[in-house]
Length: 301
Length: 301
Image (cartoon, rainbow over all chains, first blue to last red; front, top):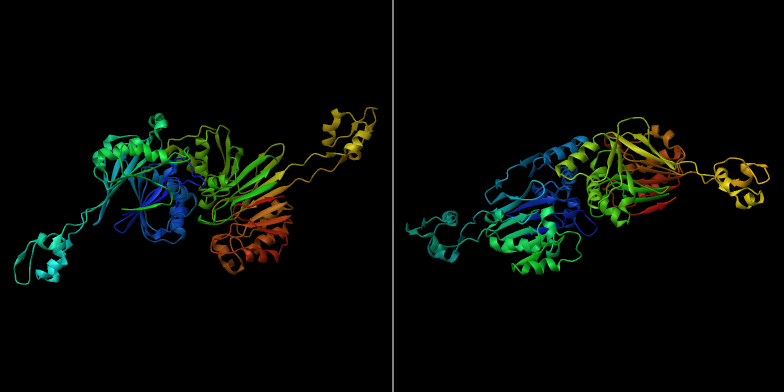
């Protein structure tokens, strides 16, 4: 599982800070999460192949989270894309994108499929054999969802030496990986656990931006491997959290602790700050395993 | 008159090329012309004060000419702008910008005034004491206007030595600048031409992008000081001009020659080319005074 931060700042794009966008590489998918202005340029800068993006998740309709989407959709057309593109986001997104395509008389030559979200409860919005994606309802100034990406249970791993010793036909290996007991060449039933090892535990990633401090999300993100939680402010500006419906670094860390996550990544920094040391130190007072997002940085888990 | 090119490339923004946007400084105005994705970042990079922009002119509703507008409008709000902003562009622009403001529940706290254009004839769309702006109807795949910016006639310049010799009261200097004859302290009528010099000739700038080769614009841009004319292609790709409704560098130069302009600036280069020498050399075969636009470059006239 690899996360590439294209932008992790709030509000307006500047020469040295990008608004929110990130790419999650998981089980051979490249999921694009949010798409602030300039995202397509950052995709190029980070050498992410446009053609690998098939699913885009938009948390909410504030500009710093989606103003780059219409440009990316248009660029896919210019690149003569044919692969369908699925976009998941709040109701209204389809209207605003299609209005702009209509005004430019430039319809896409690939299928553009909108999955508009309106529920205030967590929903399963995508799944295949390897991964599933759920919404995480957040509390912000407008309708907003985070997203939970979960690997499905991995297959058991063969203990090849034990399998050979047990004299099992190769035709049964697939069944062994799936956890079944099988008969060996002599017709003896072989217990699965005696020839396989536990699978790699499935990984999970929760993206929570933008949101006020909200303990209601804890059951949804319980025990995730990695949590990206917005931390627009530090303690000294905590008073801004309620009117703007944002969080401090400390609040993000409290959520991480209570949800027992593996790693917390802080992001969505207000551009009022020149450095980010205090985000980390204040969060670390509540939860130890804290990383700071940074535009252009990749994390592997 | 100073022109700063923020972006002069067609189609998609890339790490090293920006879509169309430029700032014309004329008679104390900062007119923003087109606003492709990333324009607000380029304004910062070029240290142009956002508060000085009061009029934005959008040629047409292809994304590479206006996808940065909604972000700029939103940033003005975050910067607590109060000054009115006037936007001139094709019908539809108001709907797409206001829809996005509505969806983000973020109305501007400054007056946002749209002047939607629908005429296929040249119109006077802005004027004050010093400058006027006219549309230049262009032929492109969708409804498109160029813009002609004209300084109004400048005042005559006082020949101070002559004025003093003629013993004219300082109260009459304003009238002299306006071209009137005045009486001197002895009551003798003094001919204006004997104590003033011709004014600096007014400058003018024509922005013509995007357009197919179209001689119908020549009467509108006749004798302008500076013409920016799109040149998406060079000769070898001329066949693309008709289907895409664009021009070659040579065609831009032919328009410049027939319109007897002072200087031609070529821009809106297709991103298929790695260098621009051929744009200049092919244009120079038709018209000598050719400059190449370049992202981040300023021209003073």
